[in-house]
Image 1 (cartoon, rainbow, N blue to C red):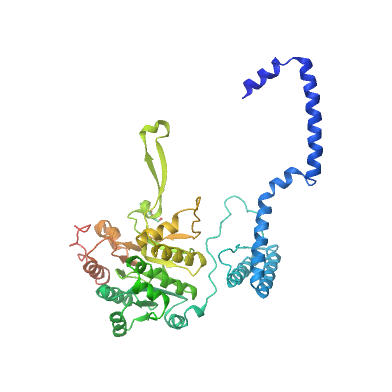
Image 2: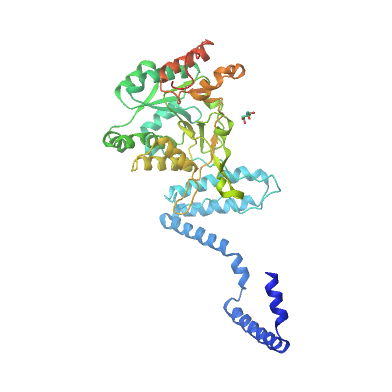
Length: 436
Ligand SMILES: *[C@@H]1O[C@H](CO)[C@@H](O)[C@H](O)[C@H]1NC(C)=O
């Protein structure tokens, strides 16, 4: 760059250069005058603020939309906003109150049916703290419980849930034998907040006989027609549709498949800081918690290494959802995709919706997520390939074991019960690592 410019300036002759300078100054002054008329507040100040101006406009627009839906609640919204503004100017003690008000504000905005367009206002803009002290929001506010979505279910949950949380399993008679093992382990572990969504009469009878809380959906309910008339893929979306109502009613739900043995109470071991907290299909720390996987393309020479981010999928047979808008959005996205072609595996869809970022033509889900401890929430690959062969790991007491990696589920579940409850040290030995 410097070369051509300096060469040009030295080669120009003196008189021509002088008159060019005068012309340039005159043109500059003229442009200055024109700009002063067009932009009385300055060219650059307007430019640098255009981002926030745009945001303000968006905020105003969303306020107007809320206002047109209901005057009364828009008044409430602006009152709450004013309260938040007041509070945020004072000190740290008020942070909790701000959070509560923000939750109320969000709830009020959701009430106006504006959940899709809502601008989440979390207090007034604040300055970032010193290095190392800033933390983004990860724990979203819970929804305002809405009993009108299913009063009958609301009554059941009131009885079954503990601290507004419960385990939910869907079952039909095909999986009754596994349900039996799972339920008996749940009882032995002292867990009371457990509910079976009974998909047929056989399971209703089983629950009655075994004193297990159950919920059978109303045959007139819309989702039942999906179960009956829909194909395989519509039915696999059922789980996600049913869970929605639990969250809408304000409950935290631990979805549990029936091929799971409980050894401890999972509610003593979850963090509750994320929208989605799930067990992993990973088999070591890297695959369960994420790692930098380097892709090598020698033909690229200097740039032969491309770095990738990898994580083994979350298991869609055992996950905890807080009752938040992002968690409900996840359920809706998965159910929606499973009800339309192309056919897809629910676990793949669950993970794609959870992890793919926004990109051109696509808005990604903004949900916070946490991978459960892989030894406490253990998959059957970890147990049979690693844990049972390691003297130290063998002594650890998992919270659950999920027989997700093996087709001979029932005998392996029974062996897990023998091993962890009855102390039978060789109970796991007969099985091959894989399905053989
Ligand atoms: C795996 O992760 C756990 C939890 O973060 C940690 O305590 C443990 O040391 C890790 N193990 C290895 C082998 O890195």
